[in-house]
Length: 313
Image (cartoon, rainbow, N blue to C red; front, side, top):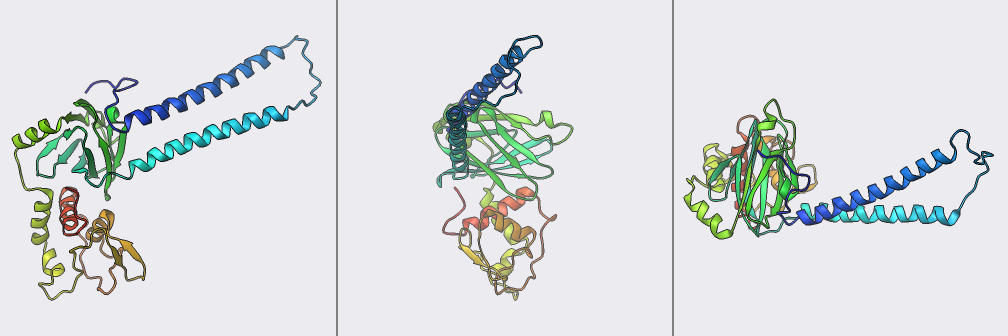
């Protein structure tokens, strides 16, 4: 692990804009701080003990100056807020054609799995100029996926799925940290993100030992846990058909409707009584504590692949 410089290289689609916003905030704060410091020093000198300054306390107001000062500060604040809000919204709208990689944080390592089944520990290879979504989960405590050169950071939270997306713009090897204190060996939970040309990335994938893809592993787990017996109508128990459910509205027993996104599918596996589908009895067993995060992510990937919206490829 190397030290992080004050200004790491800009190596992602977000880096340049985030740096520009940061330096704009820094410049505004510096200008405001300098102005106030000058006023403090000026008045400290003017009204020092023994000076001949007028101390009668008569109020003197300059309304145009006050309006100009207040209005200009407000405008700058609104501009900076709007700029930051736009970047924030971009963060939560990844492209639909992004490469989807699963990532799990664990004391004290990062585990990644590519769509073809290739796995890595404390190292993540990605192609340059191609959007990448890293779906994150944690097996124990809160971790935080942080790549300074990409200006991206996202917590991996136990019991829920989060994601971060980026597009690497420069080939190279960059630091990957856990930015959330996660235990005694937190400082050792670091690795590398390797950005490669698409050709080099494809060649790297070919050389890696392959196992079943997350979707294939999820399908095997789906059958092993007995999910297919109920949800495919093969048994006596009546359960919702999971084909084409991901990304579509689901009617609930409480007369409300929700969208079957990743969070809904995760919750339905871990705590099925949380949101009961309309027309079905709450008889599904909860799998919380019975399957690990990696298995859960594989199951979710398989269920998502059954939909016409599909799991990201």
